[in-house]
Length: 137
Image 1 (cartoon, rainbow, N blue to C red):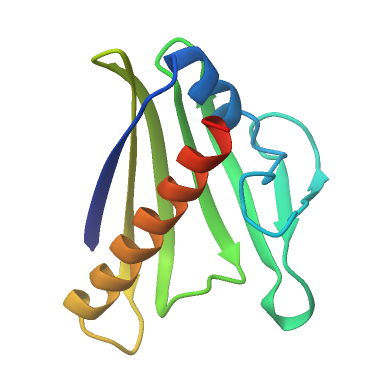
Image 2 (image 1 turned 180 degrees about the vertical axis):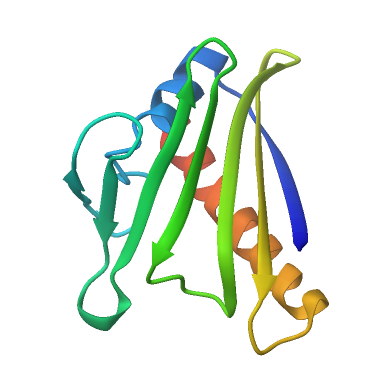
């Protein structure tokens, strides 16, 4: 099983960053005005975005407001050559702002572990940047 962790500091209060990360039904931080369709509420809910054969379905496994942590899986539509994807997002205070730690475990599928890790790390870095841009506007 492979593991990846990417961290990014964001110059906003931890409560502001947590409000965006904790709102699992929203993907407004994705450039281009992406919206999600949602089935359910709370743990077990599924958010879907994208379309056609590229629709991504993410399932919220848990949300801990006290620890500012969410865990989710992507059982369908994973946009990378991996399987068994399980991610954790943690928001923490960092200096005058916040830190977002995004980690996951997975199995590479048709690529080496190093190739899969590089893809996930690049994607996480890009998405942390999107979230940074969204919360600091």
